[in-house]
Amino acid sequence: MGSGTQWNPPAGSWASSAARRRNMQAIKSRDTKPEQLIRRLVHAQGLRYRVAAKPLADLRRTADMVFRPVKVAVFVDGCYWHGCPEHYVPPKTNSGYWSDKVARNIARDRDTDQRLAEAGWTVLRFWEHESADDCALSIAATVNNLRPDRR
Image 1: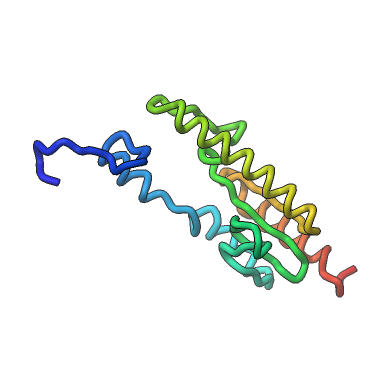
Image 2: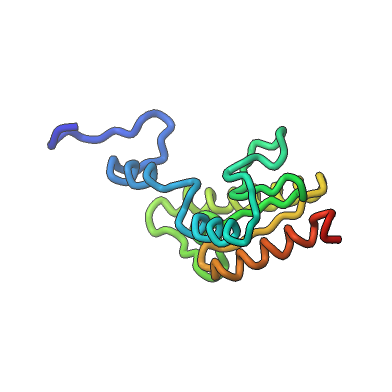
């Protein structure tokens, strides 16, 4: 797009500008730094897992880490996108859209938790700002306690 050319968003786009669109498209949905750090720590404890996998085949949602044999799904939620009570700050621009988006994400998270629990899964959710060491210890303890050979 050359200079002087006015940017028009594609049909159905939420982007208020070309720069905003590029910025939002660059945000990762998986392999974030908090996820990677927690995964490294859990792996160092000898645990193996699936990354960005569907816990249930008929559920169109993925967990950040999935331990299938013991039915544990781990989610590392971003403070902004999942409405952290400590760190979420409502946006100043296009606030109606983004606040509704975060509210839908929170509702989807609760629905995911309920569906997985009904299917016999243990759901562990952590905020991106939580200590990776504490998260990894909690994950390892839960997985190890659910192993049949450890009961």
